Length: 145
Image (cartoon, rainbow, N blue to C red):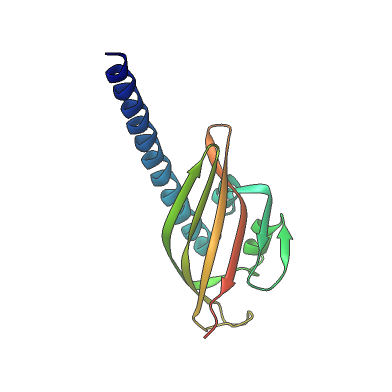
């Protein structure tokens, strides 16, 4: 009987953890969509909610940036006429979530590679803070032709 209770308890815990991960994955998918829309609309209020104050990015321009990305969007340094993404995989581990996928951007004319279609791979790292997920780090790199 003890083995049966232990087995049922273990299955219940596993089911609850799986259900919780599904909820978190949906939250992250929604956040990534909000982020893409906010970048396109230059919505600084939304970006400040999603991106950590010390958000660190290993950027496709071959440099590492820590903070200041919202200001770059507002100044037009990060600006696209098109931005689509395909979130392929999410890993939930405690209060950290890692998402990976691909994205396609078309920078605005007048910026580096303006008007060109650029395909990239990305990794985003989120951390749970004050009952919400914030993006703390990102790596994006262009896919070589």
